[in-house]
Length: 176
Image 1 (cartoon, rainbow, N blue to C red):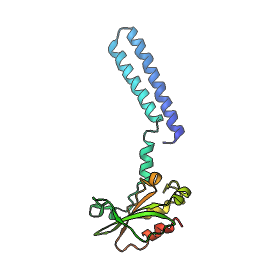
Image 2 (cartoon, rainbow, N blue to C red):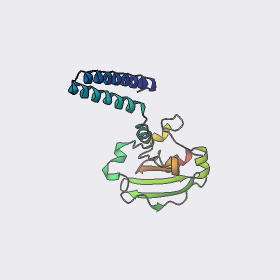
Image 3 (tube, rainbow, N blue to C red):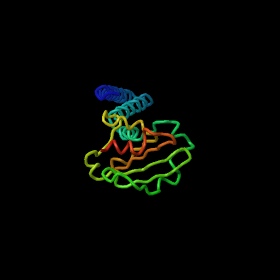
Image 4 (cartoon, one colour):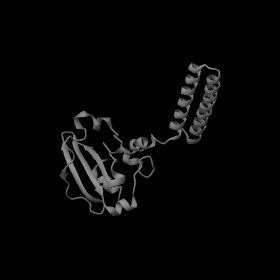
């Protein structure tokens, strides 16, 4: 929901809550405690919903959804999910201008790569947002995981057997 619309709706909720608190006070003064309690509870619910609308509690979840993209269902099915034992085999021959270190794990369907950008690259590119025009092409990489990029400079991809476009070399080219 757009921010202004969300704010307006929250203020309507708070206004309604205030009205229910007034009704609760009036009915309590008339001795109708059941109606007073009900009105107070509805008012409290209005305050809670208004507060939830104004909080950015779910923004972290939305950011994580943007960072973690499992693009291609075929490359992410159960048979070639992220390896249970992790990606731990040292990867040699990386472009040292881009990558500080890297690891790989071969599975029947292809190879998982976990690579870490150098401090210099991290300085130029402190965050990657694949909704940004400059980085949206990364969404085409299979099994792309960017959960740890912001903190550690880590990028994980899966290259299925027979894939010759969205490979580790292509990912490297994105940073050169």
